[in-house]
Amino acid sequence: MPTDVKELTDLVEAADKATSGLENAELRRVAFERVLEHLLRNGAAGTPVTSRPDGASGKAPKANAEKADGVFAEEQQRIDAIATYFRITPDEVLHLFDASEETPSLVLHSSSLDNTNTVATRQIALIVTGGRTALGQKTTTADIRSVVDNYGRLDSSNFMGTLANMPELAVLGKPRSPNRVVRMKATGAEQARELAQRMIGE
Image 1: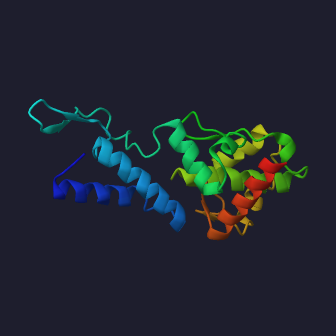
Image 2: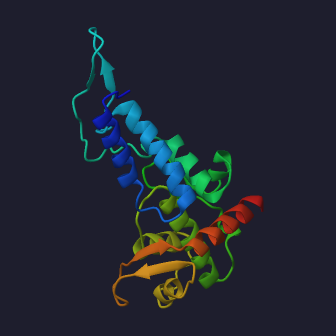
Image 3: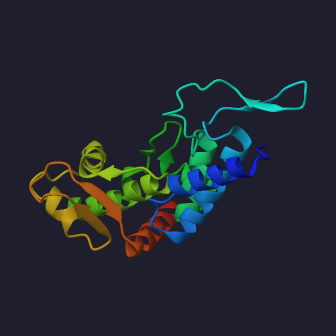
């Protein structure tokens, strides 16, 4: 545990920077607490702080510090973050996502989706964007398109138009670009939560 005032200040600033991209205030607060807890335990580089016989503390050598910011490094951390975002239990998360990898994969049963491709695309967009937002990850139209295609619900000619016309999402970038950034709006977060909770209850 760091004891130097400057080091503590640096860790707080690092946690604040790591979570600054989250728009939802509640989610940002939870993520900030988790990141700060991790940094206080492991140090700013995401590597363990070791205790020396003389009582001083020293950080273990850096190993791939660029990759290991440690925000959601473990599967349970990712599950907990997604559960907090959707306001469901960690066990219920497993009905929606496989969080064993860094980027969560949608495992929702296809029968939970609407029979209409357009509506199913909107549902997938909300859940996928919500899951990635919970982990502070960027979502693109290509990410959503891949999942929609995997579920056999892709309508290529209307896909981009469907996303662009969703009031719950902000689709950024040039209209004709094949891959645009997708961000969840506050109203979208509420819709995503309601949708996830309803799907789990079915």
